[in-house]
Amino acid sequence: MKKRKLPLWAVLLWLLVWQAASMALDSDILLVSPLRVVATLLALLPTARFWASLLGSMARILGGFFLAAALGTLLAALAARFKRVEEWLAPPVMAMKTVPVASFVILALIWFGSRNLSVFIALVMVFPVIYTNVLAGVRAADRELTEMARVFRIPLLRRIRCIALPQVAPYFRAGCALGLGLCWKAGVAAEVIGMPVPSIGERLQQAKVYLDTPELFAWTLVIVLISVGFEKLFMAALGALERRLTRL
Amino acid sequence: MIAIGKLCKAFGGKVVLQDFSCEMEEGRVTALMAPSGAGKTTLLRILLGLETADSGEITGLSGKRLAAVFQEDRLLDFMTPVDNIRLPEPKLERAVILREMAAMGLTGCENQPVRELSGGMRRRVAILRALLCGADVIALDEPFKGLDEATRARVIDETKRLCRGKTVLLVTHEAAEAERMGAKIVGLLDSKG
Image (tube, rainbow over all chains, first blue to last red; front, side, top):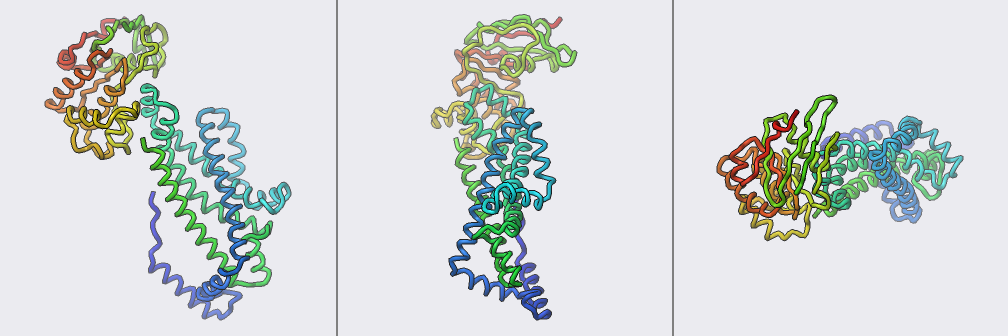
């Protein structure tokens, strides 16, 4: 499942349209120019507060993502093995898929306060995606290979590494790619409401309050860059780990 | 001696095996011959522990290490032939595997993933996996199907050599294959009620 890259010409054309529109409007509050966004970002980069906000959000949101990936995989494996576990998990999974993020955010604010809000929201958003994907992967696993492993009495660990893992990995990877996009969107939205300090969400909220559109765009650009950058890094690491684990 | 006694199996009211009995001499090849649909594969699956019989028993298998060549190759597509053969027994030396692969006419493909190999080459990898893993009892379900005439003769001879001293149940339609393997032939239809 290879993602198609964005064509450079299309990106450049949209940047030109954006620049032209901002020049036509001539208002930094309504629509800041792309050049001004880059200048704002460059001004933010050397400040300690920028890095504290960035790292604070990354730790919480990615913490929620990793927790969801681990829990989703473990519970999907159990659900595939025990029908009762799948039935027991069906209502909460359905709720996580359908309840609006805002409801979860308000509930989590009451339950946990603002500090760990984005951890919980990232977890709630990513868990059903990973759980559903891994469960589908286990269900789609080739029964003939499982039987072969039984007959040859291949030890459990080798079965998991060499037979189960290569079959489930594409489903897990697809879940992670989707989950990484979701966790940043929902996690930052939760931070905007809960305003934990230091965080990207808190900086976005401040930018909104002071109508600081350049900083709002600069932080948005940061979120896009770390979301895309981390996804690429994570997927490459996952691929390398998979190759290492499935080696006999 | 592995003894199969009065084995019965039905799927949803359709009787597949009825009171089937036979004995397999240890260290020898027993060939089970019957037309399609006579229950050969079901019998093999019961023997391998993949199905349970409705009644009857199999004795002499406890503590024995099993291996099989299924009707399908059941290989791990992303792995090389060498790794597929080593999967049940990772301590198997690469040199031994390469030597036996060459004896079966599999050369120059040892580092390719098996998904890139032809059907006949994949079949030979599946056969070698069963023969080299150190099993005491080997079930071969139409193992030479899909091999051309010249390759088939060579593979049968190599299989016979590598099976020496092991208890083998060969399922086949071809009397010539059973004869070339030096097997004792058992008919399945004879035992059906």
